[in-house]
Amino acid sequence: MGEISLVDAKARLSEFVDRVEAGDSIDIARRGKAVAGLASAARPRKWIDKALLQAVTRSQPPQAESSADLVRRVRDANRF
Image (tube, rainbow, N blue to C red; front, side, top):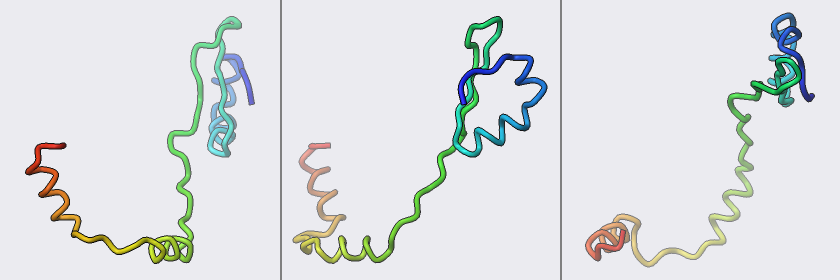
């Protein structure tokens, strides 16, 4: 959205929070200087395509050793 004045931010905070929630980011200016910003606190999680994940997993060759054995081997070799 861009830059808004501090006065506008105080008067219309709910509206600006809704816009930020929709994906905008807003800079707040005092006397023409940017002093703060509004941005989304958390990005929405992307859904995982289960069929694609299963296809990728099936395409991987089986591992020769278990993950526990791998961790033990690396730990014992002091290579962590």
